[in-house]
Length: 152
Image 1 (tube, one colour):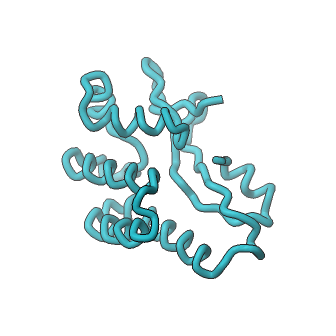
Image 2: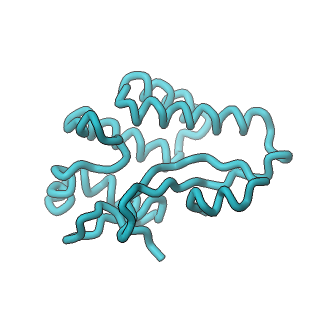
Image 3: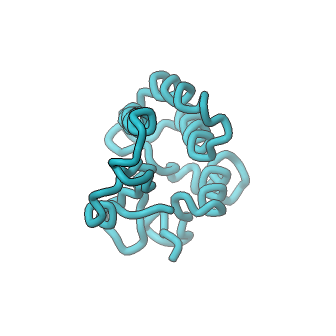
């Protein structure tokens, strides 16, 4: 299940893990999406620590500290080697190492170049298409000024 930041604030008893910031059709600013992990009081200290560690990973990722972000991701992935979320971010880091995002932007979505690659079948489409297929983050809206449109 994925919820918006607004929904998460209205259900404060739950602990959430931020997944990403996505551009939503009709919105000027990216929307933060989160995964509910469980009731605060029922979560183990290990679960809470893993959620905090992922938050730190996102900070490193958005700071474009690729080496540190990859190392943190490797540590997070050890107990969950098949995590789609971790594989998605590994692919994104590899993509952004080849085609760095602008320094003033965030590293949360593929660049204009990867939108071109979306049509040609390179790494960009894999990032977006896999995301859309698994409904983790949304899909690119062709012809729009925004990069993503959440599914209904």
